Length: 401
Ligand SMILES: NC(=O)c1ccc[n+]([C@@H]2O[C@H](COP(=O)([O-])OP(=O)(O)OC[C@H]3O[C@@H](n4cnc5c(N)ncnc54)[C@H](O)[C@@H]3O)[C@@H](O)[C@H]2O)c1
Image 1 (spheres, rainbow, N blue to C red):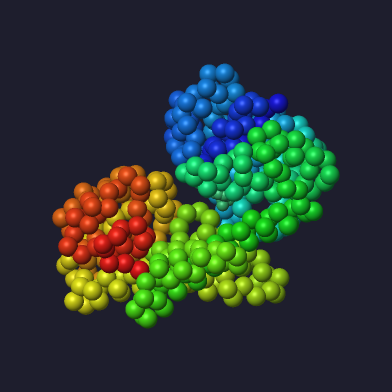
Image 2 (tube, helix red, strand yellow):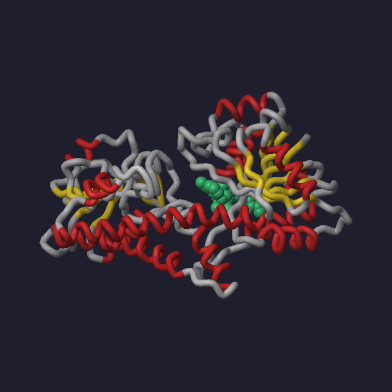
């Protein structure tokens, strides 16, 4: 059977790579450069090997395309497009809507449509199904299911096979077909009673992380005010064998998920008259962390950053990936520049960003470590400036949270 995956980014390409073993996969993406590279067997996503893509391409099991009509005869269509926030920091459903338009206008036979994009409860039932029906001029009924993606790009221990997958269909038939699809490459499937439960579970998973990260970020400010080590205190608390889970402080949260998904939950909560106070406040605490860090750096440097050369070490949102979406480094750099510092950044995994390129790891007045990739040596960081402030807890000998 042919499957079509709309969006060939972190989620869509990861699914394409595992599904290629069992299906003929068409990966649709509106980015022509990505399509071109993928058809040459070059992956842009950590965890998807070029060799896998090349194998599927050679065996005729994978093709990337920007041509929407190529999805017309797919038996399964997976939606894996972005669900960001708009300028007003509200859910931006434009990408999902565009994917629905593509499906509605091009799918010429009855198929199973599975949404893997993260969105608010009710998206499958009240947004995706009606949108596809609205755009379709063909009188075809599709089956609909949700299976929110849990992939953590760059992670070695958990993958598509050993990460349990939540799913629910709009009908029993959709559920059966969805189970059949994922059971080919996932060991544990968790069927829930409605798409809304699956959608809400995904949002709560990421909100749980967002709130706990905010809590530990606030706690780092408390321990600093008390003159004790946040890391030693957390390690001590973590000796409790139950009822505690350790999170560590940082410059903030980044990536497509933790800074964004909780706002989808907050928006749907408030639309339904329920409070979302923790979520809103946690978001603020995480965003404020960058300014707190710059305050600490400034006060350690005679109260001024004017004219000082500051090297931000690591601008990816987490170690060992090139992803800079919503990275906390952006706000750290903004606050440093607002206070007159001359800022450059070092991150050879990212390479170039906003028209700037990674600077050498040396020669600054001040270094601020936002993300530490594994291949960046601690000693090189310590030697890069006479004053080093570490927000990661991975640079012993530096000042830090
Ligand atoms: N990145 C993660 O770690 C992760 C984890 C779990 C869930 N998710 C969720 O999965 C969804 C996708 O995220 P992602 O990280 O894969 O995004 P991404 O930006 O890496 O990839 C999305 C791709 O979709 C393409 N695209 C956008 N609109 C399109 C359209 N109408 N037709 C064809 N292609 C289109 C883009 O060009 C891009 O290549 C989001 O809802 C996200 O929240 C992401």
